[in-house]
Image (cartoon, rainbow, N blue to C red; front, side, top):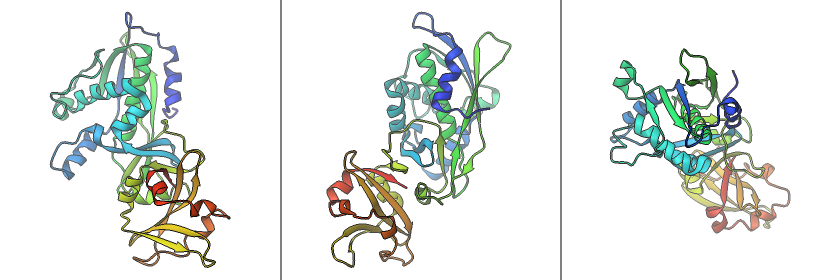
Length: 315
């Protein structure tokens, strides 16, 4: 079975009758997921119930082209207003306590039939959905993405996660699709595009879903604030080359040295690299020169204002 990428899901749905508002399509989703265990792990760490939409996630085409941010922001970015409404619908069914008082998302039907075991956990695995073909496409991609994202990671490691999405035969007349979890694979920080893995222990990366273009940069796209928080960086240092001409900015912590290696002016994007700090609490003078571009003219113009506001890719 093939992995369920966003495009593969659309291909699977090509044979589904194109429902309209007046004659909507009716389908059933059967989902294997670890959402119950994922939510239980979060509850064990915090004193309040956390909404799925607030969880921080990583997703992307692959480990060298991925994105970090909140679930809510990603869903809005990937599927727009329709995705936002459907996310609320799913949350209303799997997190009824935290969604109490929230308006229902989409008014077309998304229903569940809970088994006796699911009555106890509150996390259904069978969803009946009614909507247009576009609605069905969005809901299929969203459910696949959620299944791939909200699952238990390998302890202290970053793991890539995939699902499969296939139509199955049943004894009913309703079109039925099955979403199954594939085995997770460890992502190792042994390439220049995956050094970001060092900052995200015990994290899942949902593979096969759209993210913003990195414009040739490789790694994880995230905000500058998130970059600083995840690396626990505690000081900003300016270090001059021996010839006194080239000045570079470094961020150091007891564990890491973080530095920019290129700046894309047209797309206002800074490519960063991170490496272990061999001298605790001191800048690593020898870490960066072999990664810097020969002329490093961009480094002399990389002001604090640019650093703090530019798009960030860590790889």
